[in-house]
Amino acid sequence: MKIAFSTILNLKFPVLAAVAFALLHAQGFADELRESYVARLSARDHFSSRGERLHSAAEVIRQDRANYYVYNIRDDEDEPDTFFANKANRARLEQLLEHGRSEGSAVRRVMNGTPLIKVMIYRDDAGRDYITVTVISD
Image (cartoon, rainbow, N blue to C red; front, side):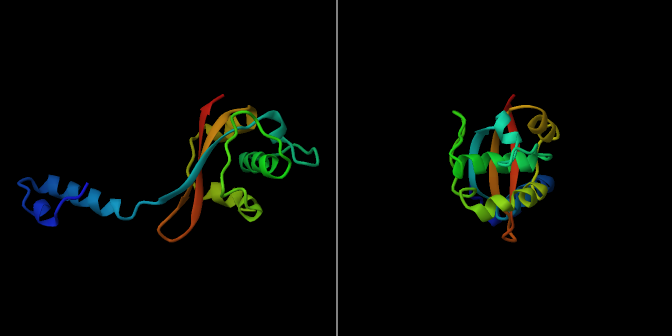
């Protein structure tokens, strides 16, 4: 939605003008959604390829992507993505999740169950990538 700056200045209510200006200004600096995918984190995603129990949500999500791309172990609800098809990007998953935002209960649900999750991969205005994780269902 485009609004001319002169229109904002001519608004009769200064508060409304300030809010409109802030919204328009923020829109120009929004982070870019690069990609998203859905995955079921099954019991096998909770263990490394060496059979060791994983200890963080990021490790489980990374193992899900390794299972998908390296070992061809896929759950029916798993979707492909191009970002984590790259091994170097999978290696950065802990950092990407640390810099992202996720539901407060998402980490607990990932570690204690087999949830269906949505992962969204963003790039901020400084060029840094991060992910958000949302639990769709348990």
